[in-house]
Image (tube, rainbow, N blue to C red; front, top):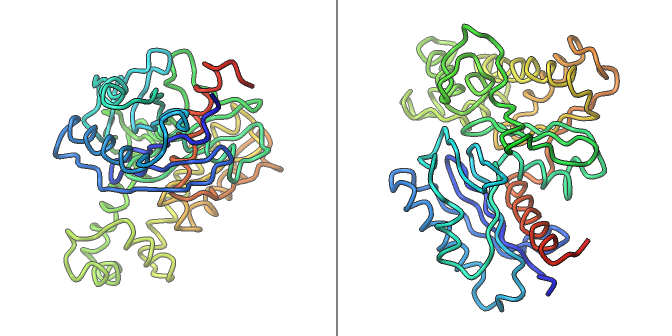
Length: 324
């Protein structure tokens, strides 16, 4: 039977968002909770299951094509297993099995950057674009690569880790254990560290005021608010984020020659300066396609991961049913 709806779940380092999604991408019900990191993997699974139960209340199981989940982790797509997770305690945890054992629906998991790219490809800024790179800036930095209209996962599903492109081999440590990765410069923790350093001097006074005078209370969102208002210290911080993003994108543009780069995630979508600086760096330094490459801001906002995860569930359902 053709399921009319799918459940899309976007698990992030800060929050979990889930939605009941129609085939054309419209989210008809949604639920959001803070990610219960401290509760460990089982607490995270409990939260996911509770959200799905809430979303599917009153709907016949035959109407649900399945559940798709985007996880901030390296996911072996063929085995449907979580190999490694930088920002959540999910590495080696059978997330799919734990969720599916408590539900009546099939579950498919993927990396959250992949699901965001799927969402933008089917319903958002990249609709109709066959070759593009998606990058999501949030608690971590993720992404996905589409070539010829197909999501490129690689041999085991670990491809598309845009956040771990190396910018400087002697750069700051990355949460994954490496050094100088894009995530070391462009994720929330990096922005907060830079803002706290600025707050130690007069130039960062406005950021400190937004935090109520408490440097420890500074958030990336405060820095973005100050940057959008023209604060000099905040503009310098977010311009650096954009430059580092552009530096990473230069290499990918040269290797892949995409039509577009789509910048998403809470940070990428809320601070225009980031995508502007990235576009300028690509235009100045890239070789392949630098004259016509487009740098686009994602259109779906926080819904990209949910819509993309639901699309993943629809694809899995239709493949099982032999539908095209």
